[in-house]
Image (tube, rainbow, N blue to C red; front, side):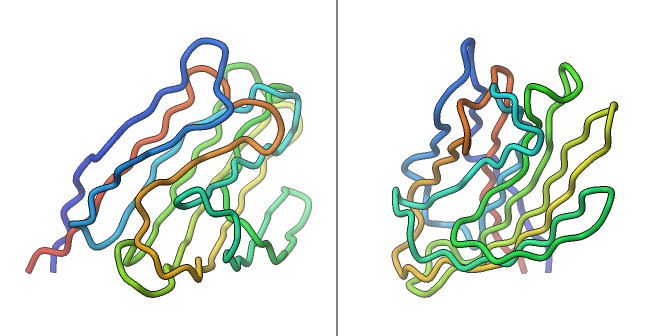
Length: 168
């Protein structure tokens, strides 16, 4: 079985940064969604989480995170999902990268979510995080919003949304 990726939307943060990046009116005719992200925080935070919510709802997320810090590994539970972005106090012009995979986003059941992301600072090290979890809401996902946990997402950060369809 082959999978077809279709680019549905792209958002690049403009001058001055942005508090949020949102994909609205997501078509419901795909099996899964993938979001590719290259992002940097506008604030001085070493490991800046970019949080993700569906349909404007901030509850119903159950996640397990594995975080590698270069000096060890930490396993954590979380009530919201997100990716790592590079803080402005990290190496200049360096962006964190990540991918989010959302299965069965248009179904009337819980949606499974996985993501991996990384950032690095040439001076001190890097971070990598893997997230696995679910959103228990049974509504189809029609919008996805990314919000920087502290401050804004920096200019030139890019978010690309793909729909995935299984081809027989």
